[in-house]
Image (cartoon, rainbow, N blue to C red; front, side, top):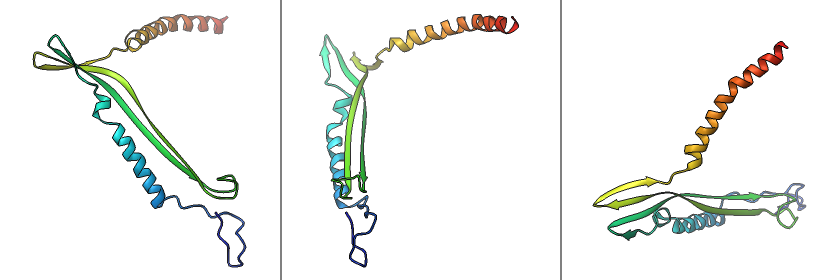
Length: 144
């Protein structure tokens, strides 16, 4: 998008498109509304399941993100200096636990992550056991 100067010739550099305006604002609003419609408590909390007097409600963590970019210059658009804009968004859910309702009492039960509860402490223990041996070996190499 180029604007002529006082001589009627296009300037040597393109005029960048406005970064904000009614069109961009409307698109951002529509995107935010669309994401808001899709991400609700029903996404984080699943449908309750009841069996033998116990109700279980699944719980998930929901993360949402989106972005928009706009550029200008000779490489933008169809090569004629016009601006180009792109945008995108997404959401991800991760199961985190469940709510158990039994005999009028609700209890949250997180899902266990064995690699954090077993593998990480085991790796720390093995590292702690190996460090003194490694230190002795390095000390012998320096002396010898």
